[in-house]
Image 1 (cartoon, rainbow, N blue to C red):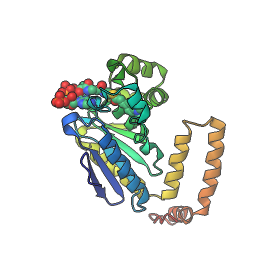
Image 2: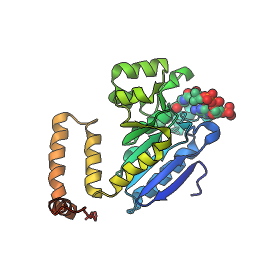
Image 3: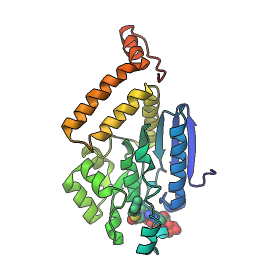
Image 4: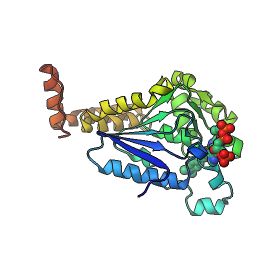
Length: 258
Ligand code: DAK
């Protein structure tokens, strides 16, 4: 597929995906989401890719779904064509870690896309919001649900009902993002985290990711039980022997994914 709305770079075992519709502040239209879905399909199928970073521009991660594309659609249109449902949740099905590196606006579907990633590293100019209420609609890609889990009911209600944006500092304080860095350091910080993950045992990484994700879905006792079973399962891999032997022998581990 020839990409027109994304720039995809390969850095060793890490794929960096840049959303690239600068004329529309990276508004997420159907073409962009199709290209993102296809790119994530490729990264998942390529065993040499161990981690993915999604970013936008300095001005906008993404200012939401493309309002101009959806403005004239009728209920029959959106229902019949399953509008923007089919290609919106690919990132949630990735087994490999996906980091969102967010600078500038992450609004509406942009905020929702960032929240679908495994964690968010924010630049100090990042602004998060779910302003759909201003358009006479509501968040449609999980915003009312994920935002509430991440920041709590009161802040989620405030943002969803008033369209108030949250700056990077507030997002950091309430746990929406994992860390905030100066804008100039955003990509290098996200890539450093991704390279660190990419060098680890891929099986441990995928299982750890699955378990942290399960904490949002399963009751605590069930999640802990699942963790115990999957912890035990890691002893079936050579990487567990290698990781622990390397610690004892005071040398770096060489993980093979076996
Ligand atoms: N869609 C289309 N174009 C957009 C856009 C958007 N979301 N956001 C910005 N643009 C365009 C502007 O129209 C403008 O284009 P031109 O007029 O130059 O042609 C250009 O980007 C620059 O924007 P501004 O001139 O407005 O720039 P400012 O710095 O003055 O303002 C802003 C920046 C981000 C505050 C402002 O552009 C803004 O408020 N944008 C809209 C933000 C918004 O309302 N976002 C939520 C959209 S609704 C679902 C999945 C997802 C969704 C729903 C369902 N399913 C799976 C069912 C998601 C819905 C949404 O995200």
